[in-house]
Image (cartoon, rainbow, N blue to C red; front, side, top):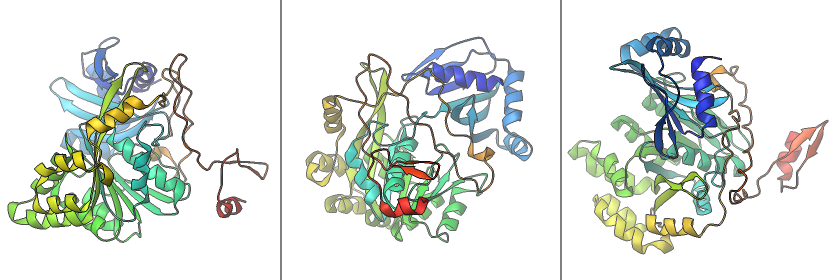
Length: 401
């Protein structure tokens, strides 16, 4: 087994969310939000060989020019997002180990009320938070809600693809920036000619990407995207401040018209279960919120969230109280090395992504996980469709037959 595959499997068995590799240092794992070293130092030559293996041909030449590369792979049966970069010691790796289960609102321990965001027909839903706070997983859970409930065309632009999405009722196309399209901006220009209902933009980093994302949300598409920020107000302020002062009034007007919701989340430890759960602040675009956004008065948003519970606003304190009142959580089993979906780059062109495995049961002694809400599900054996006790749409059953 290759070095990275073995290290990724070891990190997964230890319950780590991240694996950091630096020449001459022992591997560093992030477990429960804390860092710890484990094992023997890794040689620079070994890390360079792994980078060459993962970045063949032109991708290696591009790495030498840029000194960094983003990609996703399945390593040792574990789905990972990797950043390879040049550091003072040599080539380093930052590896994010992705969850070994399908991202849903229930499996992420998110409030079920967030499912209403998947029912929107147009506008912008922004998921913000610091690095490593689960933003991409939350977006994947919202997309999963659409995928299970509505026949809509979903197009994602990601760098790299983290969650492999299996079409159910929706048509899903996933494009990786750098492989399937050169930039987010080009992918968004293409998307407007590809008849999507829902567009997922992995991250808004540059003014042109932000402008095109707002245009897409303004022209009848439902757009999910992510941004790094610590608060709801900061997320919106960052969007506006990315533009020159003379352009900002137009951007605030666009943002006011297209905004549907802002989620700002962080992961907080839940010691009784040994897991971390998302803690959110949620801003819904009520009429007063739209006026404040149009005026650029982002400092008014916290007080509106305090008094706007009836409009669907959630402060962190209110959300924290909801979490404290929950008796059951989803707790994934750690340490069994359950494989994740295969790397989409390794799949045959045009082949559908395989279904991710079901989540394993909670460890003995933990509180029982919250049961997922009933979802359509069936299997076909010998031409017989088995409904497994779930409600099912007659049209979709006949389509399968």
